[in-house]
Length: 210
Image (tube, rainbow, N blue to C red; front, side, top):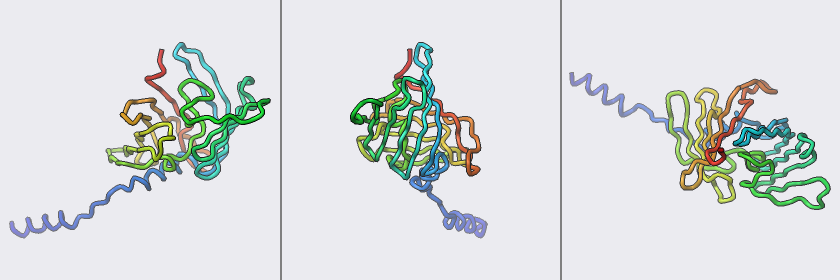
């Protein structure tokens, strides 16, 4: 009996404990969601609380960790407009207007639930630190805190699939943990380079309801 007990205790003592590196995990989520640099066409569909719908088509280019530009292709009323982001600085260019207009991350050039930070999205690791990671059965839950006050959302909660290391849901919160909006990542498809990522992101906000 003593030998059995001693053997079990030895196993408990020497069994290694592997802590999850939140910073590494977040960078993996970033890379699996989008390349560091890319070009893409996107469609934004804004559904008003009364059911009215407005669609925007954008061509977006991202270079490195902090440079993003989006050009509006449709509708006709927005065609030719563009937004530029260099780090924390953002501008809106409107055709026939002499100078670009400075804009902020929490403002919205399209209205509705989408703000400028959503349109000119950087890597999450560029704007947030990981405070904690919870390991669940099939997913990780990352608790993020903004690095600066210029970031649109003070806190994020990211649910990421364990196998793909892709987000399935993200909650955007204030410093007081009030929910601003929730993003749902759906319809995973294979893109160029054989990379599988969500092709649809649905956004819902308790602050934007009829």
